[in-house]
Every structure is written in structure tokens, then in C-alpha cells.
Amino acid sequence: DTGVSQDPRHKITKRGQNVTFRCDPISEHNRLYWYRQTLGQGPEFLTYFQNEAQLEKSRLLSDRFSAERPKGSFSTLEIQRTEQGDSAMYLCASSLASGPQYFGPGTRLTVL
Amino acid sequence: QQQVKQSPQSLIVQKGGISIINCAYENTAFDYFPWYQQFPGKGPALLIAIRPDVSEKKEGRFTISFNKSAKQFSLHIMDSQPGDSATYFCAASMESGANNLFFGTGTRLTVIP
Image 1 (cartoon, rainbow over the protein chains, first blue to last red):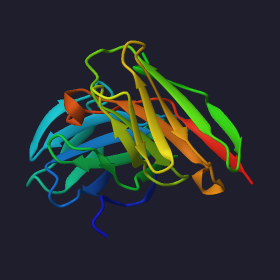
Image 2 (cartoon, chains in turn brown, cyan):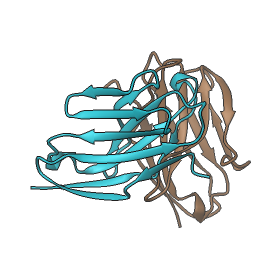
Image 3 (cartoon, chains in turn yellow, purple):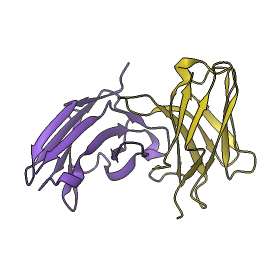
Image 4 (cartoon, chains in turn orange, cyan):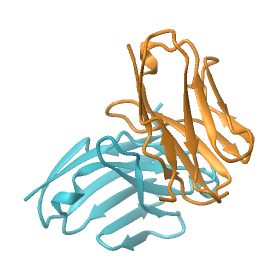
């Protein structure tokens, strides 16, 4: 399977804990995006990278959130001091510079 | 503020019928309009996309109609099948899709046999 992959698929954590998600994009794609999707809503943009450079961050990305793409390949999204409001599906997408975005299966986060 | 408005919220169609989902936008800088299909527990899958230099694009049973002056676009699913039952999202982006996507709120389609 050469699509976008995400790990883990599900994460249950207690409020106040830190969590980290990983995204592996389609191999030749230089752009990588993170979105958040809550139940019954469309995905909302969080941030995106071109190669290893983080080019844009949404105001939704509070200082508890940090994303990295150190070698321009896989990316990680870390949430520190999780809150119940962070419960959502976290989606990763990748694309070529001006091509369509292809999404991964997502990581479902539940904060208890 | 919702950048892309989508309707209806839910839609029930008989097998073989036509499903129509509508979207509207305000930002004239948008120049790329994709539609995604999402099944429960899965990520959105790209269905079809259009740029504002054409008024219609067809791929198989899926057609996008685009009205630039009205800032509206719609998805038509011909000969709807039970397997089409899913949530559909319209989206819009600037810079020919190289920028982040703004999604509508989704339409839950149910096709009954």
C-alpha cells in the first residue's frame, strides 16, 4: 500500500498526558498537511510543511501543539497536557507542490 | 466563520436516483474545488475536483457543476448506489490546491435499495 499511513489509529489518554502521532506521506510528495476533524464536522486545517519547512500554522494550533517534519519525510504531531476538547480525529494528508491532497486513515484521539 | 457552506446536511435517495449536494463560497481567491467521500472511521478520499476555468467536470457517475458568478458548485451522483452511502465534503483552496483546504460541514448520503 503506497498511500498515506498514520500511527496509531486509536489513542486513549488521560487529561494532562502528552501524546504523539506519526504520519508517513506518499513517498514522492513534498507537502504534508495536518487537519483535525470533530464528530459531524469537516476537517479543519492545523498546519502544513513543504519538505522540512513548516510554512503555515492555523490559530487552532495552540502552544500545546507542535508538529515536526525533520527530514522532509514523515511528520509527528505532539499534543502536550491534553484536554478533553482535544478529542478528535487527527488527519494527515500529502501532495505534490500543486497537486490534490490525499488523506490518511486518521488517528482517533480520546481524552478521558 | 465557515468559508464554505454546504447543503443539505443529510440526503436520502432511492437506488438509481440522482444525488445532488450544493456548496457556496465567498472568497474569490479560491481557485480549486475538490469533493471528498468519507466512510465511518476512514479518512476522506478524493472523488473529483474542478478549477474555475471550466463549468462542468464529469468522472464516471460523478459530475461537478461550477457557477463562478454565483460562487456556487455542486456534486451530482448519477445512478446512486447503496455503496455510495457515505459523508461527502466539498472543499476549496487557493493557489491551485497548493494551500490548505477549507471544508464544508458535510452531507450524509443514504441510498436505499
